[in-house]
Image 1 (cartoon, rainbow over the protein chains, first blue to last red):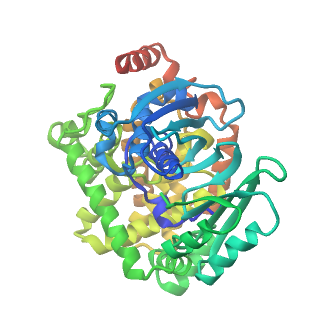
Image 2 (cartoon, each protein chain N blue to C red):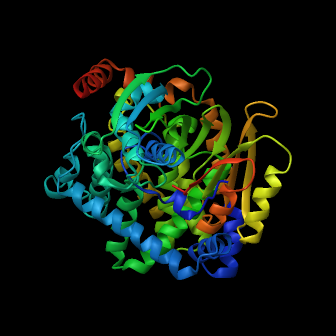
Length: 223
Length: 289
């Protein structure tokens, strides 16, 4: 959705090399996947598509994606040790080459799971200069750049859901920068993505979580 | 968004007194941060640049593939050709940062990781020559970022989209414009320096051996820095490039689109497919397992 660009995007970011797209962008994709999943997963199968598959390992893309899943920032030198750190953190990773058709050449697919049975499948692309976009969250087409905090609301597809959520945000004085609603099919499960200028606070989150028809809420910080 | 044309940046510089001040004013306006906060951010950026220069010049950076590392130290401590002085220093520092980048060290993308050596190589050397401290360097980084922002808007900063001219070419234009301002040149003079730098690298292809940001990328940071210094010297002497910078950028955009995909970061052309390039590239990926 919203792309924030500043002078620090041109002279910057501060990052661990060698490639803003294949390394720094890959860390950010991992961070976004982790944030959407809600914790460090116990298992991650990472599919590499296009240039990520062909030249990614030479750029440390593999290390970078794992680092992101561990919550390590793009400028943190421990990216180099991400595989060892993953073992310590109980994260088991395997990589596969995948063909995602017309997807952007720098695309990764994450299949994440945890012992409590939670799973998530996400796809995202690194567009250059560290800019990224998550394009799929489970069954939903999305566009998440990670440039602003994001509120994810899983809900039932029925009238009044968007109004109920945005009313809470209005009352809590949270400004909405961008918004998408995506659904599996009419009347089934749906996903609301709301980009906000400031991260949504605990109170607002609790109120949204208990609203009728809302089945899950998560805050994804800017990465 | 930063300035979308050099013409608008120039016009704002008339009002604010310099390109750096114009860039800072727009950043403050658009991000809501106060000026001192922005300057502090650039000071931190400058600190990372200095650390990467020092690490590379000391020869501490070695890449996983073994294809790069150690050349900056040769230039910094060993050979002294007939042009020893600021030129050699700039080349050494540009190589240093590029080697640190290739070794998965910490750098400032400027505008990209692959071209991260040009700006510190040129600007830190020019500052040393002038005896300038941190604040003029912070100004220089603001100016460089504004110039890069213009290129990002009107063309591209990505080698995959526009070839190496989009990375090293952009970095050289940014460095030349900022270097001229630091040396006391007018905003218009900075524009000529940016044009002179970018025209010298127009059409440069992106042909990385093995797809790695090492050969020729590391060396190109040094040669790109040399082009930026040449452009600076010419512009400061009063040489004016007849094509305005915005139009040179348009040309770069058009040329970039005409560069075949084999020469845009795919490792399927140029140096990457020479017999030696192919052998080195294969060895590098095999070595990584």
